[in-house]
Length: 351
Image (cartoon, rainbow, N blue to C red; front, side, top):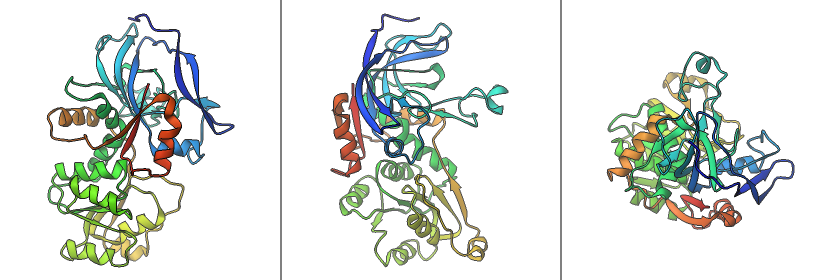
């Protein structure tokens, strides 16, 4: 069913040839048979958005609407959609199945897709008043969960949550988290819920380290300090870390994380950059049986489980929303993220 949608809306558009962003009036999307149109309540500004603007993630289209961390209310549903109705509160998963890979052809779902298409990179995102998405890419949001917090779930919380599964983290395992921005801060919170001990947060900014202590880190260290590897060894009783999460993606942080792993330790690479990483001497790496695992994204059940944790008060995201700006102030939001103004966890845009 399609309700009365307006003909046009405001949306931020990224023009890849010029590298420019502008607020424009564009047509409101209509849903296909299996799609849903969502009226956007809030959408986050993520470092991966900046990576596309800067060319570190190659743009696939001449122009596209950014934004892949969004929540809102269902405004219209396609003819084949049975499980959503107009007015439902939802959080939007930041991807859709490609429909062409081997898994999709043989009946796999969005979590099985081998070439997942990511919102704001493969199709229009949610820095807009409305966004269209597959009906299977939505998770219901209870009335007690603020829509701004629900939006943050769609990447800044769900990606680190998925990383815990990638790491096969177990209770009482020691954890280090490099980079305490949006992803790393939530990794600290989630590792504590999962029972990790001790949890060590690493960031060069003192204010950010203090915040991590208040959100669940047992210790925080400056990764640039010369004695940091020795401090980690001391904190872990000489054993080294069981799991090191790198949320920065720099050659230096990956090397440091790998260097302080204990025997059979796992380094999980969550941050994205174009840098070449080095893992040190092959003999040492093999002899200590280290594992290095790349992590990207999350599964639909991860998003559902996070909604449950927030709705039950098990996960507190009240500190995660650093600012909510009108859509027209997208440039100010980008500036705050680029310049680390106030060291935001997440800046949101509200259409």
